[in-house]
Amino acid sequence: MKKKDEDMEWEMEAPHLASLSRTTPYSAPDKYFNDLTTRINQSVFVDGLMQKENQGFTIPQNYFEDLSVQIESRIVVEQLNALIKNDGFKTPVNYFDKLNADILSKTSGTAQKAKVVRLWQTDFMKYASAACFILITASGLYFNQQNTLKENRKVELANEQLLYDIDESVIIDHIQESQAPTTVSASDTEMENYILNHFSSSDLSNNL
Amino acid sequence: MKQVEDAEILQKFSVEKTRNEAFNLLLSKYQQKIYWHIRRLVIDHDDTDDLVQETFVKVWKNLANFRSDSQLYTWIYRIATNESITFLNKKKLKNNISLDDVSGELAESLAASSYFDGDKAQRKLQEAILTLPEKQRIIFNMKYFDDMKYDEISEVLGTSVGALKASFHIAVKKIESILLNED
Image (cartoon, rainbow over the protein chains, first blue to last red):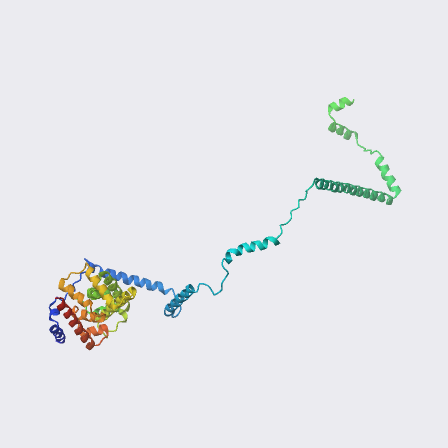
């Protein structure tokens, strides 16, 4: 009843409007509502996935609240930087173009090129070097030889000294022993065996 | 198809096993109503499609917290209305234009739309509705096309019944005047 009264009120005030059909004059694409449920469910599913992905990440507290202020501040700073092209200092005109040349001209007078002296500049030097080399080598060989002779002499002297230290009678006995023929007594059988073992028949026949 | 009661939907949604079934029942019951409600506000079908999906995603996420101090139907309407208003405000900011110019854009969209089935009179009516301020347009649509009671509209918009009545009456007079002048 209340609703009917509500309707009657405005219908009386706007009869032309009231006479029009109260259908929405728009249309939707063909079969749009057939799969709308499926598509809404898909949206719900995707939204759920996105919520899960975000759970792994954290952001500082009040990050988004401060973000807009930070962005605006940065924009202002960049705008100021663009306005202020330099920091107030000036340089003479074409200063940097000349700077390179100035530095080069100042450094070229002080720096001296290192003098290169060749070792064998003249023939004299070459021959002198060769002579020195030969002299040194020969000296080395000579002194080495002398050293060897000295060593040998020392050994001989050492042996002579040893002889002086040994008694005469011992030396004589040794000499006599070395000179005396050595006689070995052997039986006839032993001798025969020895001859047969050490001499061939042709040797024997030649010697007889 | 027999319409399921809201209480049954809510009861099934509270049980995890039957949650998806409950949501599908809810979609079957309300998706078209919500679609046309949004469509009347934003005009364009593709924009409407996006907003319908966003609305029901929010319904899914928040239905568990729904307190039965309002009807389920008005609660869903409120979400849909807020999404539409947010969308229109973003459009204003994006194009750096005033509300009146947004209405102008919507009127252009209406004129260019291939999904308009109405006759000349209905086109005039739609053009007249687009001249209304945003909130007044919402109120007019809900009263005129959805045939909602002022109490229900009050639940959706959070505006008193008296203010709603006044706003609707002003809208009706304005539209009537436009229709009569054009005739």
